[in-house]
Amino acid sequence: MSEHSEALPIRSQEDVVLVRQAVRRLAAQTGMNLVDQTKIVTAASELARNTLIYGKGGTVGLEILKEDRRSGVRLTFEDHGPGIPNIQEALKDGFTSGNGLGLGLGGAKRLSSEFDIVSEVGQGTKVTIVRWNR
Amino acid sequence: MDRIPVLKMGQFLLVTIQVDMHDQLALALQDDLTAQIVRHRARGVLIDISAVDMVDSFMGRMLGNIAGMARILDAETVVVGMQPSVAITLVELGLALPGVRTALNVEKGVHLLTEAVRESSS
Image 1 (spheres, each protein chain N blue to C red):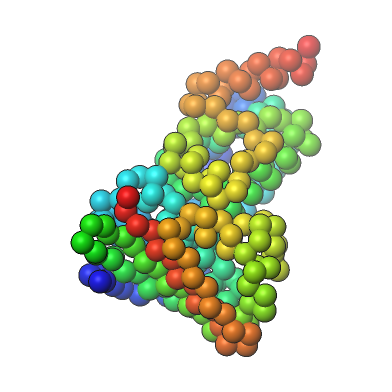
Image 2 (cartoon, one colour):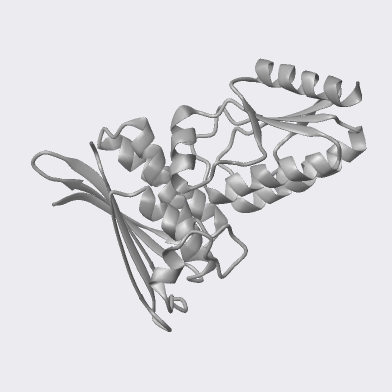
């Protein structure tokens, strides 16, 4: 179940920094170790930048998850941008439609315990990641 | 606009990143550093990231760009003080920072630069 939740706008580069800081706070709250904290903060930074640049802005929902034996952080990035025509292609390293390195989506996936992406051309994109506390 | 200060230290330039940088700030630093390498005829650049708690693909690319541009301008770049958690995350992200020299701290970084400059001028 989800214990704490909040939502933040992603409309500027400064917002991306604020998202990183909020994710760090939340991850630390769950007692996550420093390496895992850094992984989810880095994944959040990649995804927030995607939301800003490719999604033309959007929001991120932040939640702390609590189960019997573990806790974690779930982040949901949502935009109403142009959407991604070919998700498999977009997840490959080196794929970029902008001027980045193309490590954003694939990198964020590798840094997460769970990763889910739903995108519809012309409607937008929703990326959900979870990092469980080991 | 905000700027990251660039300090001149003999024939080297020292940058200590102490804020959580947004992308534009990282790009401005890249431009400032290349301009100052030329202005001061610097032979080396030290970038201290010991206070940085995350390096994503954008910042990683910026570090690589600085090292590449500096090399073309006849200066060496050493990134110092990377936190272990940042290093682990960078590799998992898929960024091994090719072409960027690293050292554990500023002192070792200065040593590395001094050696590199001595070698290239001998």
